[in-house]
Structures are given as structure tokens and as C-alpha cells.
Length: 313
Length: 313
Image (cartoon, rainbow over all chains, first blue to last red; front, side, top):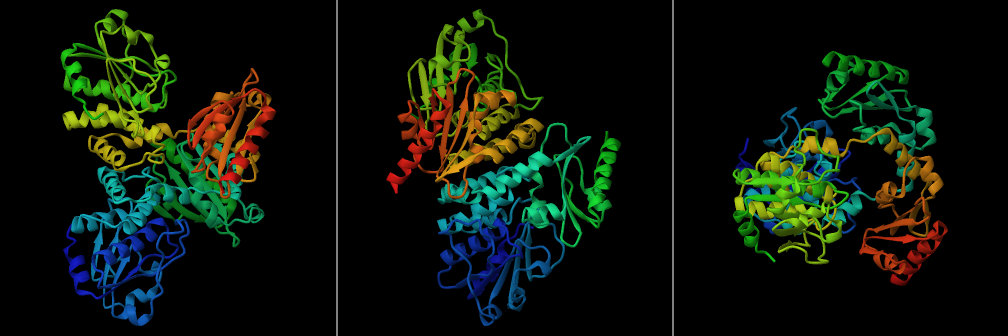
């Protein structure tokens, strides 16, 4: 699906454009919404363009922020929804009041909910999809758009670490730098750390376990309470124990206040997804998740991983 | 100095080419030597091209390695010396037996020791300089050259983190990916970690100090002995305590067996170099080093940093 033309047909004929993203926004969602808004404001100064959202905080202080928009404005607008595959996860349901809608995304297709849908699943970030579209159409971007687009590219790609890492990712990055994306400012904000997170890392590095090639860490709810953290704060940090020599998979088990355990499984090649599926979860081949009803069941997951690894050899 | 022509004049007229780098080679030195050799072997199959060196180990197992070369071969060769600004740090002094010599580097110029010298100090790695030269001349690279060149680019740039990070760095990376650089294989090797280094990180995160915006860590020789490490293993890891909120500089003090302390100073903008110079050292504005004769003098360095910061405000 490489036809951007319908996107620009709708944009050209709309006087008001509202941009939406997903709940619990990440850098890619912020970057896509704000980058698109800044680009459209630049190229169509006569149109009214708004980005609805907020909540992502790893943004340099002087970078542009979101807009407050009333229902009436949204109703007469073209809504562009970015970085969202699952309708229910929209950051503001008023998006569906709009006259027409466009979806631009890089996730695997799950459902159609816009008039025009443009999805490229071989792109590491939605900002990559957007930058390609914008550059194909305009061949230029203002710095105010290049900045958030670079921020999105860098966060979703793990700073050019995660796949798909291809020629286009780097080429897009090169273009954004040519449009004066402020990389140092972005990096300084993204990588600022604090005492608490360093002490948390120390705790992990001292307490993780290794069992026959599986590196893992178990956080009980009592431990998390003591650290004033919760399962959703710690589980995504599973890559703290990535790539340990001799280990083929790494897992974080984090127990919630309700006893439900969030499990995040990762690997460098070994397929962890079947194990996640076995325990009622899913995800990508090398990055999956599931839940457990009892923290002591972590043993079952570790055993299943070991068993699966033995069968593969 | 943007004239590659003399480099290729000498290469064209030489039947034997030997390639050298610096002592204690890093990824950029490995990548420059091997990348250049593989490219020259590809484009000049009738010439004999050798790379002399070894000792850098973060290389995927199936990547090409160095050559054993006798003195006679070197004597009749054109020597190409890469990633070296200081003659005394050559990895093999036999380089200076060669008939003619070329230097290709990205460090600040210190001394002339080759017939043709090509230096670009605005490039983050020597592999970046080399890739530009090779692509300008040939417009293509075999995978066997793209792999080590990407490895060098990624190590010296901290995976696209360190400056100078410009359009060209990303463009070069894009080109190397188009020539099938095996990024996953390179990353898996570069980022493989082990229990010891994770436990070391834990130790640092638990024991570093903060004094009025200066984050620092003092390693006495007794502590290093206990950890079976030495000052040259720990000092370069100063960035473990980088970018802590509220800190303007971070420093590692590591005492050697002889009592001489290696000091590494870093910042995100604050000029640490004058402090390094004050204590007899030097370096870059935001990344410098010096030595102390007494580990207890770490206090003097921390105080000097605080004083300098106050004066700047």
C-alpha cells in the first residue's frame, strides 16, 4: 500500500485537521502527532491544525506541546489518527466525532476504523512512516517537525538498535538531521536518569537469577511496595538483563497488588512467543508477554522455556 | 583537505599494500583496517593486500581477521595507517619499513609521519572517513567491507549518540546497510554482557557519590584487587553514572597498583577540560582525563569542579 495520494486529497479539502494518538503515549506517539501537526501547519498556514493528547514527558522543555480542542472543532475536522492499531486504545474518543478520518500506523493490522488507512508494518516507528510520506510529498521539513519526528524514530527504534533496522531508517534519520533535528537536546532529555533508577538497576543486577540459560527476575508485590514501584513500572525494563553470555532468554515477573503477575519475555533469536501463548499471552517472536495468577508459577514459565530450548537443539 | 586523488594514485601504482592501526585497538581501528583491506581486495583482486594487527575481540566469529606478514612484504609495500595521530602508538613499527605511506585519520593532527596524510577531524570515526572515500571513488562496497566499517562506525559513535552526529554519519550508515552490513550480528556481539560486568554495574550504582552536582566514584587499589579489576578496566566506564538529574559532571577515580590514580571526567555541556588541565591532564571539552599521585586527592578535583561550576553561573 504505497499510495499517499488519498491522504493528501483529504488534507487538501479540509480546513480543520485534528490529530490523535494512543493511550499511555510513548515517544513515537508524541513525535508522530506533533511532527505531523508542525509539518501541516508549515505547509498549510491557512488551515487550523491541532494535536490532541499529552502525558509523554521525555520531551525537551522548548519542544511544542499539545492543544486543547473543543468538541465542535473536532466535529467539523478531518481526524488523523497515528500510531494506533486498536480502536479501543485511542487517547480521546472524540476522534470518532470527526467528519472524515485517516489512520497512519506501523503496527500489525487489527481492525479498520478510519475512512483511509495507511499502514506500513515493515517500519520501526510511526514517525518513520510519516517522515517518508511527508518527504515524498514536500521534500522538506521545518525544524519544528524534524525534532519530534527524530524523537519518535529514536525511541521506537531503541536508538537504531531494534529491527527492522534498514537503509530507510538511517536515511530518514539523515534527512531529519539535515533539517536541523536537535539530537543533543533530545538525547539529553531521553537519557537523563536519577538516583532511584540507578539504585533500581543495582537491585536488579544483584538479584537476578540464571537457570540453565534463562536469566530472570522475580518481583513480589512486597518488594515492589518497598521500592515504591509497581509491576507496570518494572516489567518493561526486562532488557536490563538482556544479552548475558550463555543465556538464550530473559524474563521479568512482576506481581501486581491484586496478585496478577505481569510477565515480559525477551530473546535474541530464540522464539519466546510460543511460551507466552502457552500461558495465555502473545506478542512478537522475540518479545512477548503474558500474565500469571500466582507469582510462584514463575517456575513453570522458566521450565517451559528450558524445555522448548532443549527441543530446538 | 578533500582530495582523495593522491591516495588512489599511490594505491593504483602499488602491487602490495599493508594496513596498520594503533595499539590497544578498538572497534574503529579493527573496522578501518579490515574494512579497507576487504574493499581493496574486492576492487583490486590482482594486488596483495594485508591488514596487520589484532587484539580487538568484540567481533562476530565469522568476520574476517588479520594477516601475518613478513618484513620483506612490508618493505616492498605501500603502508596505509588508519585511525592513528601519534606515531609512537602504531601497532607495529614495521609500518615504517614500507616504501611509501598514507595516513587516514579522524583525530586532531599531532604530527606528520606519512607521505600522504588525509585527516578529517569533523568525523566521528575513522570508518566514516574511509567509507566516504571509498564510496566517492567506487560507489559500491562488498558486504565483507560494509560489516567492519559499520562496526567501527557504531563503536566510535556510541551507536549514533556521540557528536559530531550529522547528516553524513547517518547517510554512511544507510549506505552500509544497503550493502548488507549485518547489524544484528554486530549488535549481538557488541552488547553481549556477562555476570561479572553486571555485578560491577551494581557495585557502581550502589556506591557512587554525589556532591553538589558532581557524581563520582572512587576505586581504591584494594577494592579493585578484590574485584579482580584494574584502573584501566574501570576508568573508561565513567559513563555508567552519566546524565544524572541535577549533576553537571561525573568522574571516576581509579587507583593503580603503583598508587597513581587514573581520573576520567565527563559532562553534558559543562567544560571539564580546564579542570583536567589544572591537574596536569587534558582531552576534549566534555571528556577529559588526568592523573593524581594520591587517591585522597579526589576531593581536590571534586572541589575544583564545584568551584568552576559556581564561577560559570
